[in-house]
Amino acid sequence: MNQNISNLYQIAQKETRTIIGLMSGTSLDGLDIALCEISGSGKETVVKLREFVTVDYTEDIKIEIRKVFAKKTIDFEHLILLNEWIGILHAQMINDSLKKWNIASSAVDLIASHGQTVLHAPKFLHRQEKFTNATLQIGDGDHIAVKTGIITLSDFRQKHIAAGGEGAPLAVYGDYFLFGQKGENRIMLNMGGIANFTYLPASLNADEAFVTDTGTGNTLIDLFVKHNYPEKSYDKDAEIAQQGTVNQILLDHLKDNEFFRQEFPKTIGPELFGYHYVETALSKSGQNQITVPDLLATLTRFSAETIAEAIEISVKNTTHKIQDFKIYISGGGANNPLLVKWLKELLPCQFHKSDELGIPSDAKEAVLFAVLANETVSGKAFDFGTKEGIPSVTMGKISFPD
Ligand SMILES: Nc1ncnc2c1ncn2[C@@H]1O[C@H](COP(=O)(O)OP(=O)(O)OP(=O)(O)O)[C@@H](O)[C@H]1O
Ligand SMILES: CC(=O)N[C@H]1[C@@H]2OC[C@@H](O2)[C@@H](O)[C@@H]1O[C@H](C)C(=O)O
Image (cartoon, rainbow, N blue to C red; front, top):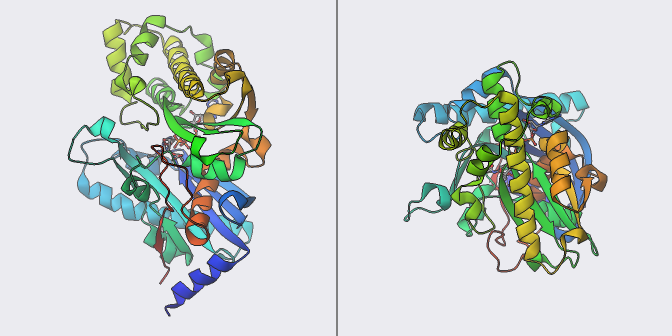
């Protein structure tokens, strides 16, 4: 038997596996690295987060990714160069982090790499009948396996699409296993570049669990902060937006998009919620002369209202009242005081940070990929029922170091 297969077989049988989960999201801020000890699988999964770090992307990395990020027309050669380069960079970031933590690569069983999403094209966006949902994450797993010497699972989203999904959100697979709690209706709301939430029913009935993107989280806020203040990358603590007033006319135009009228579940990315989206709303509403603080206040309100409305609509489809739900927030947007204040005003639920459930909010998505790899190696395709958007599959392609 090939030694790699034998190693994998042994890893699958271990009581506890050491798995590094990696996530680099739509905000392009850096690579999240979560070193996890994982035992069990499915609902019996137990995760202990041993180490976590976000390795910031340098300006050079951000510039290179932005050349292809969420763009329909790109330099094709640049894309394939980046596919290899990001894999090599991520491997270096893992090796450096392991060194800092004083952990040998031989002590790590698996790496679970999300890669860098460069384009997300659900059918709703590309609208080409003969083509299916599509998404692309780059940073090839073979490079990570060879450069770290650790078996690597990567490219998780393709199986989801192959089995009928849109390739996202995958959060439900981790949220249900780790945070489902009998007797408590939970909403796990992640506000990254794009916002999404998982509904975890108090019954723990997997058939009722649900996940969807809601629209923009921070992506438009970040974009217009960078555009107006080149030295800043985001509106820290909503300092600028808090000086502004929401422009209701512009807000109405921002909310008037087919995406918000589509049925749930749905997924989206910065391909829709980009510069052009806001420019169009500004010109259609005749509000081009808006001040920067008013624009940022309006974009923050846009995120808050679309998140709240998506949650309200989804809750109406359950047998529960919104007051019966606890919302656990995570992602960078959970640190935006204005966004959180407005959400609290719009949704009469109890709000908590997902940190209270034992996983730091910043680490949650990287941990999710470690859990997905654990399931692929040691669990099974978990059955979430027949509803759309959560196919019963295990995910990730396996790369051996040699
Ligand atoms: N103190 C803060 N005040 C306001 N906004 C903040 C603060 N801290 C973080 N953010 C926002 O959070 C963003 C980063 O969020 P996060 O790292 O969760 O996104 P991501 O994982 O890249 O996105 P996604 O989950 O969509 O892939 C920043 O770009 C910024 O907009
Ligand atoms: C295609 C893609 O990378 N989507 C991300 C993005 O960031 C947030 C939201 O849009 C979510 O759908 C997804 O990531 C999380 C980890 C998910 O799949 O659950």
